[in-house]
Image (tube, rainbow over the protein chains, first blue to last red):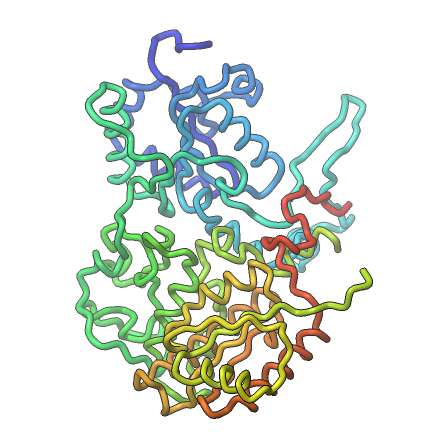
Length: 334
Length: 153
């Protein structure tokens, strides 16, 4: 299985802890998917074709040219496949928010593993009269069974293996995926060069605010409002209207789709160029525009942000400086 | 472990007030515990919340933010921005499981060497009784967060 039977370079895509939206986004590039098929042999893509892990294990190292890896590292299966695909791939791309920075799965880093298991198996909405719990290893007459076990904290792909390129977005926009695929095909034909290793690809290097067409003026906020409680002016900056918007901290590349549709940016393209901690940048921006100098009044205004971590680290908890809450990282010992 | 716990505290000071207050404490030979490492900024408004997160994740047990009294900022009103960032950041840290005492804001003018020294002393004692933070991303973090966890049976 060196060069594929038809001489085409090999392509793989994998989902770890993710929702499947990234896979759909790749299929959503419409007729461009035919270019993928014309230029690559798809050897492993669980959402689109049948393949077994042992098929990948049997491939020679670095025999896959391009692997798009979406999903965070939540359990030992995710970590095992990340390590396996790293070994088998020349170019490993962290594809989508989960692989880049944790995304929604990483909000689990606010809870201990025990709390998560209890919620899944014991809350009022769960019908589990025997009180069954998952067991990682179990022996049946046919042999030993192993199901993946949860890590105390969710990690990003590059906290587990070396990543060559980062492609943000939840999911990455189709026009950005198409552009990246075009580039890789050009590279294959010797018409272009790959960007420097470690680059962010398929995104801009500014902020969503920079791409947003809404009018910006002086921001002074006396009260944070939920979007369902306010009729937003379609022309004016959403943050100026008192609705939290993640635009100031978020990387450009989506053409400010959400604000254009009347909804605040929620930060899915991750930290803008040069931002070390997404939440810190956003907190800094939001706190600056609160229109009060009185500690009590500021506190009252901040009550309008009932879930600060969920707001400021919605997509970025695993990729943040602190990475996980204390209950999560302590939960191994509990 | 026989050595008593000595908290490591990172203190951010303003060039125009609290840094001079600390300096004054020094020249006046006012004693305060050596647990606090002071970093001079031009203004408390320069304090990016990232600095605090970096300090805590890198092994600090607490962070002290100091600045000019309200209404006395050298840059008109940047200390109010520091106040708002502090109040918001503290809420976020509490949700992350960090005790609120680990982030403290103190106003101190250039003349208040005695007050700054006593606030530092109070903070060090408070953190000493609270115990170490040992965030697992730091070298003194005791918890290996990368090991697989056995799912409770």
